[in-house]
Length: 118
Image 1 (cartoon, one colour):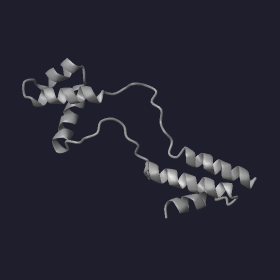
Image 2 (cartoon, rainbow, N blue to C red; image 1 turned 30 degrees about the horizontal axis):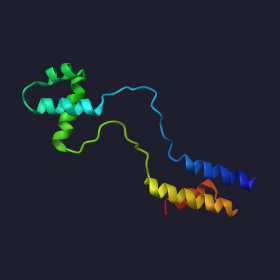
Image 3 (spheres, rainbow, N blue to C red; image 1 turned 90 degrees about the vertical axis):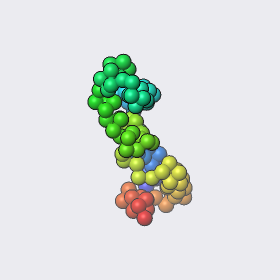
Image 4 (cartoon, rainbow, N blue to C red; image 1 turned 30 degrees about the vertical axis):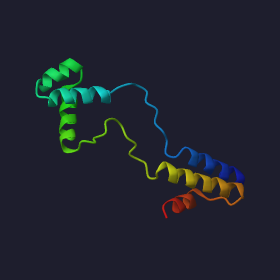
């Protein structure tokens, strides 16, 4: 029974946090937004003209322009909001827990959380 729990914990750590698979291609392409931004900032076209030319919602371009004016390295798209550890930290924690499980020193989920956030 304890060995089963250890294996389950290793499998839990392998999938932490879950990677969400997109089901649609909804949203605006970042390359198109950058091109539309450059076209708007050149001053030759108005926002509505740029939006209709590149087939991008006007509000999306306006929001992107305002964010780019504040911060030039603005990221586009969805980002993981629930990341606690870097990929290297996750890998080292995963290796430690699997090593502990292999040596029959099982940790409960509560102990794993305490260890992770020390």
